[in-house]
Amino acid sequence: MKQADDVTWMERAIELSRKCPPAEGAFSVGAIIVGADGEELALGYSRETDAHVHAEESALAKLPTDDPRLAGATLYSTLEPCSERKSRPLTCTQLILRSPIRRVVIAWREPSLLVADCVGVETLRAEGIEVAELRSLAKQARAVNAHLLQ
Image (cartoon, rainbow, N blue to C red; front, side):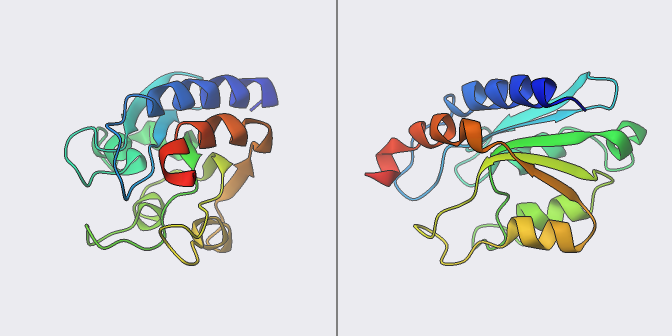
């Protein structure tokens, strides 16, 4: 996967995050799952279907877990996948690990604002998932969440 492709998909995910209804205690996040052939497979954003749904969770829910395209897919998320969660039994990190996805690209790591120590990136990497960080787009992804970061 070329860096230019990663940037293009992440920019789309950032645009998607702008669709999130603002929330006092939750980040606005966009996620896109892209097949190995460059085809968009699914997308999601925070609070897309209910007040507690996360972007990665929403995108993953739109595909069957045995979809063969997931094995070569990349999940783009504007924020590090959560590793702690009160509103659902599984975190986004756990959902990714239960899928065949083996590559995740994020724009920025979750700050300790809502979760003291998010370890989504470390957990994914420890399980053999390739995780790339596009720090050049972190500022854009954070800007969508200015309401929390002030």
